[in-house]
Amino acid sequence: MSVRFPNLGLEFEYVPVSVRVFGFEITFFGILLAVGMLLGMIFVVLEAKRKKQDANLYLGMMISGLAGGFIGARFFYVLLSWSVYKTDIMKVFDTRSGGMVFYGGLLGGVLAAAIFCRIKKAAFMEMADVAVKGLLIGQIIGRWGNFFNRESFGEYTSNVLTMQLPLSNVRAGEVTPWMRENLVTIDNVSYIQATPLFLYESIWCLLLLLLLFVWNRRKLFAGEIFMRYLAGYGFGRFFIEWIRTDKMFLPGTDIAVNQAISAGLFLLFTVVVIVKRIMAKKRAALEKRRKARFYEEQQKAEKISEEELLPEEVTLMEKEKNNSEEKDSEGVVSEPEDSNNEVLKEEISQSQISSDEDSQEKASEGEISKDKIPTDSDRNTDEETQEKTQEENQEEKTEQE
Image 1 (cartoon, rainbow, N blue to C red):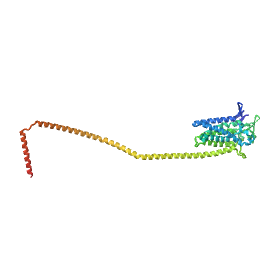
Image 2 (image 1 turned 180 degrees about the horizontal axis):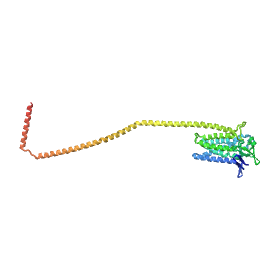
Image 3 (image 1 turned 60 degrees about the vertical axis):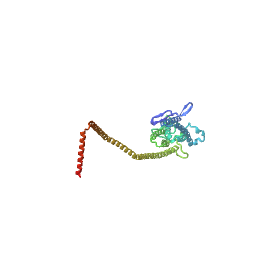
Image 4 (image 1 turned 135 degrees about the horizontal axis):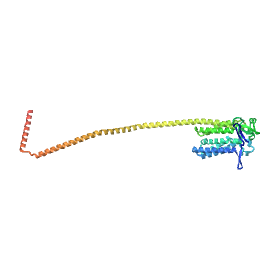
């Protein structure tokens, strides 16, 4: 049977629910779910390698999460539909006909992944910030399985995205009175008009993935991206569940389970993210002030040490200056001293020369006197002169008396 989007001019003549491979019937829902999970895991591994983290650790975490998610999704569905399974317990293990609850799978997957990280002593929140993007990739692709199963659609609509499904191909419990009132007959086949919620959710998950990449640049604490995912997905899922026709209600109430969980996730983690971001900013500001204070104290300590060392440096500089001045003064004085010494040396040399000349003259006179022998007349004249001098001296004495 065909699936039509009349307002878009699209018609898919034959949309199979499953395909047979080697004698085994495999649903397209399962194929798309597996492809989505595989692509999500590849993305996470590549992202871990890009961040130079242990890719094998992420791989082990995701495998644990998938196992826990499968168990949780099935368990949650059986729990909410216990009236169907209580008469035949073996139906619990028959998953080929569907019967999964996403939030049950999310809870089981998170618990299994957290236990794995605890055993491996890894930071779960830090790893969850990366792994949650892979989860969104799986949701974007996996939700198209509802298109092949012709399930999980919304209330009657006539908007541009209206989807028409053959009445005979959908479960009777999902067809509302409003849909029955607006049946469309094409080639003797009755079609219901419904809202393609799988498309809405797939688009919302794609938008949320892009937002997570943007928010990742402003991340302030470990687990922020994971918590933003929970809040963001809960916000979108709340409105999607509002128009869904196959709601599951809390026993004895008219409250849709998925809608209540979505509202709780949005409110809880929005508040948690806001509070933790405020606290992270305060811690960052406090750390900044501490660093500034430490820097100021370090600057003061360096200044004090410089001031303590300054007198010693000044005295050393003064000593060096005095030594240089003394050297300069010694150099200036030494020049006249050297000139005076030269003058003295010249005078001494001249005096020595003159004394040498006098000694030579005296020596020559001595030689002459030695050659000259006194006669008797010379002796007599000398005696006469001596007598005259004696007489003159006596006369002077008498006059004085």
